[in-house]
Each structure stands twice: as structure tokens, then as C-alpha cells.
Amino acid sequence: MSPMPSTARPTPFSCEKRPATGSRGMVVTNHPLASAAGSQMLLAGGNAIDAAIAALFALSVVEPMMVGVLGGGVAHIRLSDGRHVVLDGLSTAPRKATPDLYEPLSHEIGKARDTRDRENVVGAKAVAVPGALAGWCEALSRFGTMPLPDVLAPAIALAERGFVASPYLSDCIGDCAADLARDEGLSKLFLPGGRPLAAGERLQQRDYAQSLRLIAASGAAALYDGPLGAALTSFMAKQGGLIDQADLAAYAPIQREPVRGRYRGYEIIGPPPPSSSGVHIVQMLNILEGYDVAALGFGTPDAVHLLAEVLKIAFADRAVATADPAFVDVPVERLIDKAYAAQRRGSIAMNRTRAWGPGLAAGESANTTHVTVADAEGNVVSSTQTINGLFGACAQIPGTGMLTNNYMFNFDPHPGRALSIAPGKRVFTSMAPMMALRDGALAFALGLPGGLRIFPSAMQAIVNLIDHGMSLQEAVEAPRIWTEGGVLELEQAFPEALAENLAARGHVISRVLRIAGGMSAIGFEPDGTMTGAACWRADGTPVALAGGLARKGVRFSI
Image (cartoon, rainbow, N blue to C red; front, side):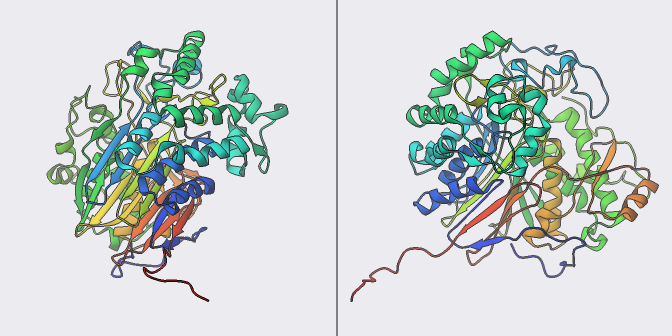
């Protein structure tokens, strides 16, 4: 997507990476080997869905701290005929889960999910019923063109032969070393000789390669009604977990209708509840539409203060009104209504921050991954997937190489709330696989990991593109802010003078290295050119395809 020349201005930061440009396809993931796996599918004649699923399986090998077949996620798919499909493969609470499953330790913002003995974070009791594998296999069977064994081949090869660990992976291992050491299988893999696997060392996962072969042969049934599922439920029974075979048998992905809104001539499309992104990104943009954001400029005190207030409004409403729609009556139409935005906008003061409560009555973790993929026929996938925390529950199913999720952390451990635990309830998420159209044509698709910070970061990238006229690379790399209503986090690229101005308005400031994770984005031009961009916050790599087959009728002669 080209920047809008009427609003394009110099940016007060420098980009660390460069975009890629092509015309026959684009794969952007948070690891170069996963981007390579996806591009293999496109080069072999597959479509964007084939490429996205191949990339996700590869990411489960090369980003084992972020994503796996025992995780969950959301895929936003735009098909070549213009239809948008949201495939919900989020995890669910086991049937034995109850609202008082954990003992909460705090009601404070930022600590409300803390529980005694970290039972919702580490170990078998933190594991929710996995949805990722079912979602990936359904997306491939319904919308892909290639057989599952072909799509799995790159991931199997990476697991069997190994790959060289990046500094990013090594750092993540170091951050979780104490929890990883509690599990024999994970300790053997990631803490050889009792120390974190170093950058440059090779990681081989032969047990996981064999599990991927079982999936290639049997599909999702290998987990939901087969040997991998038996291994999972056996582990749960021995370790005090809640998942049993009935939970696996009952699981199914759900196709949902996306949320749609309009912002300055663009149609903004995202996933609906239980993802908060579509609803609250549209809500925040509706509020911002009443201001001349472009005139405020990027990173100015007024612009950042306004973003912070809008974020706090969204989080106040999200806390009482957005959850699994099968359990909570989510007032989507009210939240995305322009009149409701005007009502909330009327209470914003530009010279002072304020505490925000919900504007209506009541009816997660930073470690995730994202892929954005497009082909030349018009199929586009924006998909965010996770095992939730770094290395999930830090427990591996013996003999399978599969890492468990700790998705139960996403539920509120306090009973009686919109996000409280209930048997079969889908986890709530901030995943934001977003797309934007202009005059009916796709303008850009983007997404990122980052827990609660995902959808605010995606919203800021959309504002960067539409209001500030940034290039795609600038939009994904631009410094970010985040607040849930307490501390206002500012990335370090913002100047200290900005922090001082905001503090004078009543904001409590925290300077942080990064907010959320590596964003993957693709911009689309009317002539068919695609631009792929990935930011500095992860190992993100765009791979672009161009060229094509020989002209029809060409013959070689001597």
C-alpha cells in the first residue's frame, strides 16, 4: 500500500529492516525458515492457505517457545472471490474446569490473573484443550490445494535434521530456564549440560518429527482420536491436568463472521469475539475519527495522549463486555456504533488523563507468532497462533516432542466475571489478524504477537498507514505505546521530552524496550505488486516471489 501523499511526513525514527517486493506471492513470518517453508508451497503451485499452514507447522519447530500443535489461534482468510472467513481454532477450558479452579492472589490491574503456586501458568493444570492442529488442518482441507504430507514436509525436515538456534530463541530459553528445568524432556532439548542452548548451536527434535509424520498420515485425528491424544491424556492424568479424551473428541474449530467498520474511507475487517481485536480496533478508530490525527503528527504529546485515552476506553469496555459469545452476550453492534464512539469521545480531556470505567454494563500472555501470506490469485491469510506463554506450560508430552499450552492463564481466575472460567468456554484473546480495503480492493493485511498488547499495536499500525502516511515498513517498526489503564508504557525510541509532557498530564510513565512482538504485514498495489514488511522486534522475514513461467509457446532451439 502506498503512503497517502497528502499526509506523508518525515518520521522521527529509523527503520532497521527493509521490505520485500514481488508480484507472484508474499510470505511474512517471524522466522526466515518458516518464511522459506511457506514460499516453497507457492513455488510448487500452492495457494496462500497452503503456504500459511506450511509456515505455521515450520514455526512450531523453529519457534517452539511461541507456537505448537497443542496451542490455538485465529486465521483471517480472504479468498480470491472476495469472501472473508475467520476460522477460530482457539483452545477451550476442559469439561472439568470450574470458575474457582485457581486461587487468585490479587484484584489489581496487571495482577488479576496471578494465582497461588502459578497453577494457571506452569504445569498440567494450566493446559487448555488444544485447537491449533484442528484449525490448521481444517483451513488446509477447505481452502488449500495441496495434500497435508506435502505441506508438512518442510517442518518434518527441520525437526529431523535440526536448525541453528537464533539469539532470539537462545534468549527466550534463558528467560525460562528455571521452569524448563522442571521438565525432563524440555531440559534435555533446551538446557544441554544444564545451560541454555546457545545461539549458533543446532536444535534437533526427532520425537517431534515423528509426531509430525503421524499427523501427515492421519491428519488431526492423530491428536483428537489417536496416539498423540492418548499420550496427552495419559500425561494429564498422571500430572493432575484436566483434559481427557472426551474433551479432545468434542473439540471443533468455529467459522465466524468478521467484524467490519469504516475509517476515513477504508473498510477495516477483523475477527469477532472471543477475539477482542475486531470490535475494539473499530471502536478505537471510531473515536479517533473525530480528531484530525494527521495534523497532530506522529509521536507528539497530543497524539500519544489521545491514543492512550482511547486505549483505556477500549480496555474498560473489554473487561466487562467481550468474551466467548457462547457464554456472554457481547454487544458488538453497540461497541462499534459511531454514536457510542461520539459519546465516549465527549469525555476525553486533552490536557489531563483520567480513569475510565466501562461505558456499558457487563453481560492474556505476550508470546505468540503471526504469519501474513498472499498469492497472485488474491487469496490472503493473516493468522495469529500461540501456546500462550513462553514455552507454554513448560511441559512436554513424553515421547512426542509436543509442548503444551498454558492457555488457562487467559481466563480470569475470579468467578462471576465475563472472562471467568467455565467448562467448554473458549479462551479470550487479543489476536488481531486484520485487513483493510479501500474502494473494495485489499489495501493491507497485518498482525503480530504480544498478548494484551496485540490489538492496540495493530490499531497504531493502521493509524500510521492511514493518518500518518507511513510506508509499510515504517508502520510496522514505528515506536508503540500501551496502557490498560494504569501505567503508560512508551518504547525507548520516543524522546524523553514526550515522557515528561505526558507525565505532566497525569500519566504514570514506564520506558520499555519493546511493546508486543514482531509485526508481519503485506501491502497491495492496484497493479498487483505486493510489499512485505517485518519489524525489528522478532526474527521476522518477508519472502517475495516474482517472475513466473515461460511465455506460452516459447521453444528452445539451437
